[in-house]
Length: 244
Ligand SMILES: Cc1ncc(COP(=O)(O)O)c(C=O)c1O
Image (tube, rainbow, N blue to C red; front, side, top):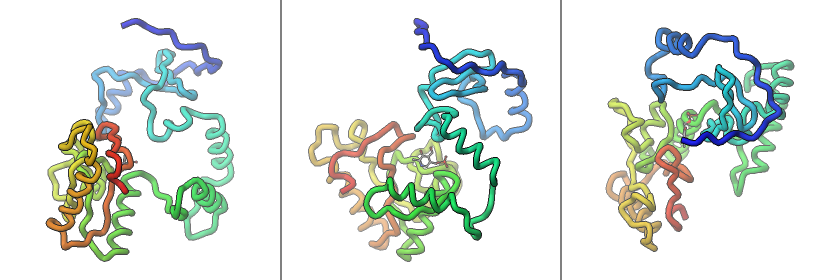
């Protein structure tokens, strides 16, 4: 494959002086649970990042075309993020929600100002899985119903309740976890049961949700959970009219 040179950058990576990739692989093997797996036989070892670039232990630079959930918005070690995190780290690192702390309330206000419609109240958690676990608990507690409609081809997390609503065998273990969850047809224009050109696909897939409620639940559900665009399942945008 042809090597396309990267544009120049002013960022000078530090010379890496830590353990070698082979040593790190051996440490992982000995001290980390094998469930935390690597994707490649000889994975690169990333030791530094700046904006859109990453460097490996040999000083080789990469353009990060994959990103991670935490860095996908503004890149690696964005100076504004680093400055804000450093300033907070030097002031106080942790208190609890039972005391007042200005930043959490100010952040909630700022976040709410960016959210549409009636989405104006925040509840901060540590991860997507935890957010979905809490959402399911709130929906069940509020509605006094237990059943939930989820979608096939969905990913909602690796904890017990996230796995329950996930609709992909790759991310489900053979333990009981989906009690009360019903997976409707994936409204998937490219690989779904209704073709890409089916003008009524949105309504037809939504009819499957109605049918599940009518035939697989007591007629009432705690909620419906779906990614706005299915991510892990292959970047699936739902057909027009499905969600409204
Ligand atoms: C749509 C969606 N929901 C939930 C999760 C779980 O988030 P976390 O890994 O932070 O628990 C992910 C993670 O990739 C996700 O893509």
